[in-house]
Image (cartoon, rainbow, N blue to C red; front, top):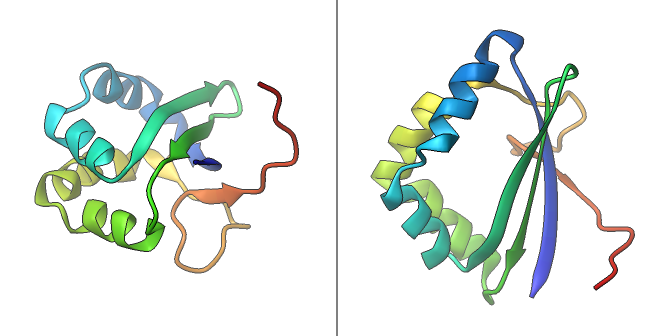
Length: 109
């Protein structure tokens, strides 16, 4: 199991919309996330800075393939067409990232 964290900005005028979307997340999107070996997925919002922090546990053996399966899913693509316009990627993200991945520096069970 690997814990992962990531950050992205949230456009100020999109906070209510983003919260509403996630209050009624689509079952097919959630099923695809689970099928790609992601567990304990949580997104936090820090206002007024409008920074989203996401964390999950990856329980698979081929992260690239599992992420490709999510990206190829037509329902997930429809979901992203709603959520992506709400988000504002960080300037410091790596090429090819939408959410900026973070390094774990501390964990306590």
